[in-house]
Amino acid sequence: MEMEPSVNVLGGPLELCSGAPRTGFFRDGHCNTCWEDAGAHTVCAVMTPEFLAWSSYVGNDLVSSRPELGFTGLKPGDRWCLCARRFLEAHDEGCAPPVALEATHARTLEVVPLEVLRLYRVLQPF
Image 1 (tube, rainbow, N blue to C red):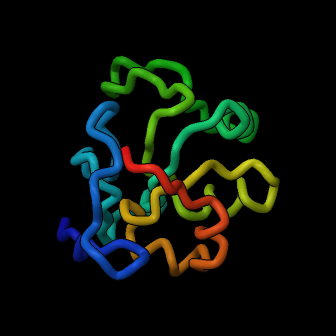
Image 2: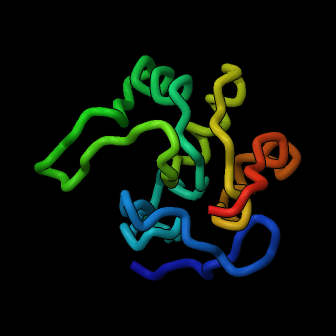
């Protein structure tokens, strides 16, 4: 698998999304992507209770631990690389989580307009 260039939606270098929990398609802490990443796990989002509940409701339980996959489960405040389409779906449903634009991969823009991402921008550093 060949990783696409690590560029964020603002055109700068892709910043770390989360090292704990380790996130990303490559589990390198960044929302890096490649051709094989069909889900485009490229949006660096800050988990909220509302988003986690909605995600579980639509069939993607991000809270429960899955030790066999090395996944401890997410809690509010955790940062996680979401699939771009899932983020857009959450936006359409009114429960999209905050987004760290500097840590969101440019490939996201193939699915989510920058204007939509800016609505959820996290302004404080992590």
